[in-house]
Image 1: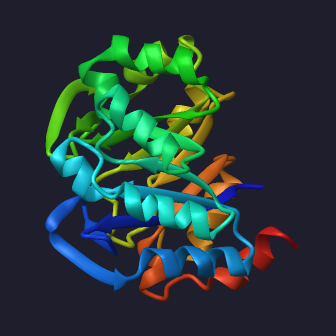
Image 2 (image 1 turned 180 degrees about the vertical axis):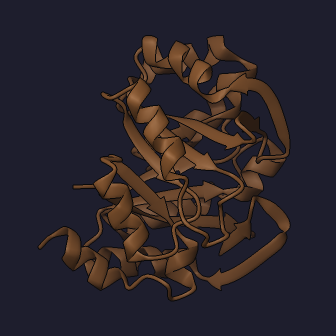
Length: 240
């Protein structure tokens, strides 16, 4: 059964969603701590938190919000956005993150990422693979690299990476359906990978389709905040 991971994206301490990663297409949805508590109340135990201020600023900004979430709930939180240095990584773990998602550094400084993987273990490190036009995007999706998705993944899977969060940027925040064919390609290439699909989820049916495609996990956010997904109904489906 697919793992369900609600998402909270943070700007200025508030829960927001962007469309296709565009900071100019921002919708504010309220208090991230209250939202996290609601997820936990329904029964969810995982949460994906993104510091969008951090991604833009290239260093962690909203660690106080992360700390509040991990202090006031028992959710297992993976955290990403702005993790560029050892200090950023230590700050995220000190604020209560169980795992961190790192993308840009894996492109711009592979040796540093490999060092983190060795130091903190593959269980605590999630490789962020954000894709636009088949290429890995970095720095809060502001820049596209020359890295192709599958070759990018190959070197890190060979190095021991077990968890990958793959976001199809053209789908993210659009409620247009997930890039199932893309995720199938990844799973065909690396069947043992714990792939977390992200981007475009608009309904319970989208998640059922990802589950049918044997995708291990899914992150979803905008569909929650726009009322497209009933969290209790989705939880009941997963736990039936």
